[in-house]
Length: 271
Image 1 (cartoon, one colour):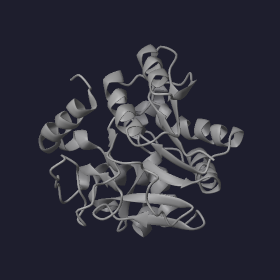
Image 2 (tube, helix red, strand yellow):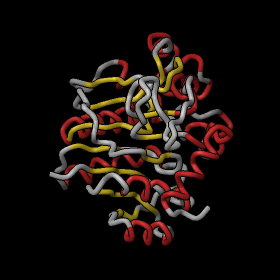
Image 3 (tube, one colour):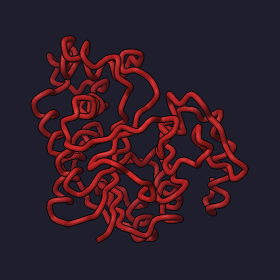
Image 4 (cartoon, one colour):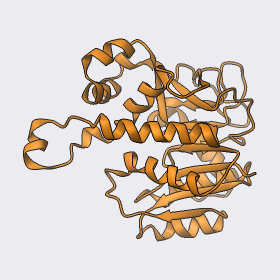
């Protein structure tokens, strides 16, 4: 039974998608499936070149971050996989096979290394979705990143159903000027972070595990305290082991640019 990497890349720079795909295919020969827009022709070509599949969706680019969970669930309901990674695409590259780790949970969450209450973005998303009472219960917890989640087939389906349920019942409360003019409030685009944190920190998925940003297999770089590279230009954790997944490297570009360019050169990617 195949493992699956699921991502979305609607309207995203194909050069960033090539880095994602080429670094992943260096280590992983399982299924790759992307959600893309009808005009993402270069991404379609890249997916074909790297033996990836895609589903073409007609969703506004500001809504993809929430709507992707509906499409992910449909794919899992129509197919059967051993383990699934759902992840962002624009700001991720791989240093090893993301499934070659002894994951303990049916769902495995990855923490960012900072408290929810200390991040203005996560604070806003959670307050606007769940209100102050729920925020006060959860604000001391470490941020869980919705951009990388790994689970078994059944565990991931359970998680996706919960993400969809929360997105329907706890919609982001838009600012008044957007309510009055029936416009999207762009500040709400990342509200799936609030749903993921609510689910993770309330243990709503049976047998879920949270992994530390400093010692786990996934580096969520924005709040990462220690940036250290080995001689192969691989980002390593505090145990001096290379992370399998590097996420949000663009948020610390000054520290990552040289190493990323070395990796791209080794992969044969023009930049």
